[in-house]
Length: 65
Image 1 (cartoon, helix red, strand yellow):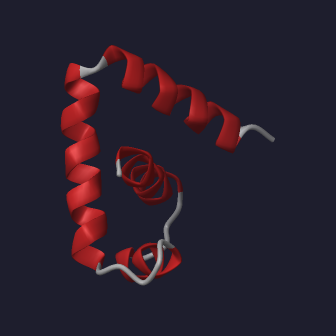
Image 2 (cartoon, helix red, strand yellow):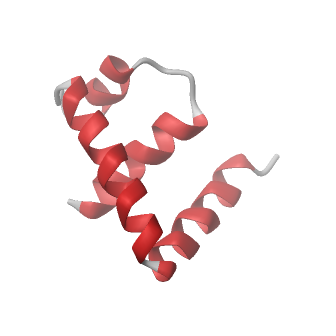
Image 3 (tube, helix red, strand yellow):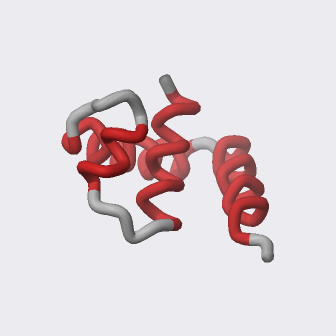
C-alpha cells in the first residue's frame, strides 16, 4: 500500500494532472484515495528519514533530463 501511495504522491507533486486522472491511472480508484495517499505520505515524510530519502531519490530520478 505505501509504495502505491508514494507513487500517487509523486504523481500529484510532479504533474499537473487532476486527481481523477491520477486515481484512474492507479486502477480506477477514487480521487479521495489520492488525497488520502498524499496526506498520509506527507505525514510519513515528517517522521521517517529513510522514506524521505527514498522519495527524494525517486523525485530526482523522475525529473532528470
